[in-house]
Image 1: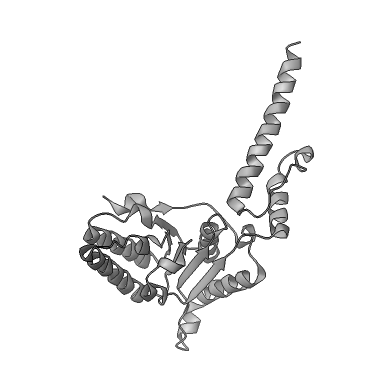
Image 2: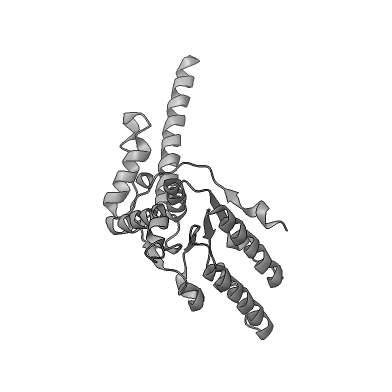
Length: 240
């Protein structure tokens, strides 16, 4: 397996203004971006920048989009790798694959986004042999994180931080929680989604207590249904 075939080098332009974050989280990311913008100046005072960040919380709440927005703000390329696609039965091969990705991100001073980071924890088995192999994989990842270049940025995402090896968790300078959006935030998100459609579609039923991804799927499905009905109606009477 060529691990570079699994990397998504995303060119989508996303601003932090496109991501719906609460004020506290936005301030943390603003600080992170400023640190990396002035990394040279801070280094003169012996001040390290935070470059290993854990994004944790519910699926569909903006972790991937946030990673893209940070890369965009810093003018860096982003490499996206889903760890569930890399873990294989031969742990040594998995370690080598991950090392290659870290090496490339470090050389390029890129943003490396590892999705489903909990796969490192989930992959642990019950028999001693499997546990031993997974420990070696975790040790490899710890070493890679410890020597990750300061000018590069590592962002990891998980829905299940509680099952990740504690030694790995300690390597992250920031752990930021992504929670389900409030009704007010979802309303703002619905308004933006619907703004490009005719006004009569802006009053569709809105669902709450769901993620942004679920809200988007719901909105687009309802809008498509309404538009198709309108087209069918026009076609029906055009034939008369």
